[in-house]
Image (tube, rainbow, N blue to C red):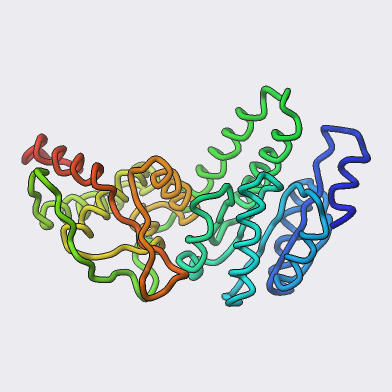
Length: 307
């Protein structure tokens, strides 16, 4: 990766896209990542294995962007790399994108809540290219503080990525999910918040899903509200919700759901709870103030047809 930054620095052209480092766990994954980077118009600095990525990164004083392509769970090697990358990204050394299948959502989610790592799930080429462009835009913005259009460009690219994800959503994503989606937990007291029945919440959720029988599901994408309803249902039912299950409940592609979820956690609307039985997985719950706000909302609207 020595050429990785030195090429960018020596060219002296701030408009020259920086090269991208790739780490992949399979030949097929490496080929996909190479295709994404080159088709997006960026240069490839190097391509390394998951096991060799940490050493390659450590030999470089700074970097621009890192693309991690995963096809399967490689255990400790992935944990070590992602912990290392999370620390680097938090320090602003480079941006990072993780591309993975839906089966790895719960496995990876715990690594990406607190830092600016983008986790894209079963993404098509348009979404992959948009995620890469956003990551590189963020890296270049730190190097070019006078670029007043960078923020707007990054926002537009993120909106493009989310729009592509939303349009690509299918009903099959809503009918399938991970093998383990819930765990019983102890109900937390809700203070003086009004009571609401689980039947009421489930009826609202069913009504929202029924709309797709008559109109395209993409017309009603509202992941924040769908996740709020799902977590309230889980809270009343004394159930725990893993990240993958909440993304399904959001009724949008997993990548979009993860971005909304991260935002809701960062704003204190949702809270994370570690799985006591599996340190690599996290559950998501409503923050106490969010639970009370939802319960008061439903008390205020009464028996109106809330959907």
